[in-house]
Length: 156
Image (cartoon, rainbow, N blue to C red; front, side, top):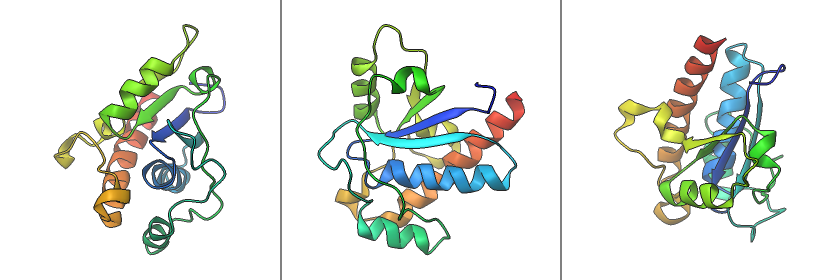
């Protein structure tokens, strides 16, 4: 952990649904818990770079009080592997890609996001781009972020 708190990067494929949702949920819940932390999100792919999150994801998140509108997609960079403490992948494909992309100098731990929500019954966050189940994405993000925050607070 850095002196200013943990630095967390949430990663999915295109950075327009799952990872920006996790970022926004984490930021809000961490602030409510009094946890100072840096959060960001990125995609393993770069084809949506500069775009806002997917409009149906923005609407679903807003209905629960999360604001995704300021976020813009970006692709994971080599610097992310030393600039963050933990990189949380939304699914196994992203985790494999992250581990393949990691430079030899990487210091960030890479793991599955849902490892922080062991009671949810899933290991991967299904992509709502395909499932269109934006509420499920939010449910899983909230569960995993609560677990992550509890872990981070206990480690202080």
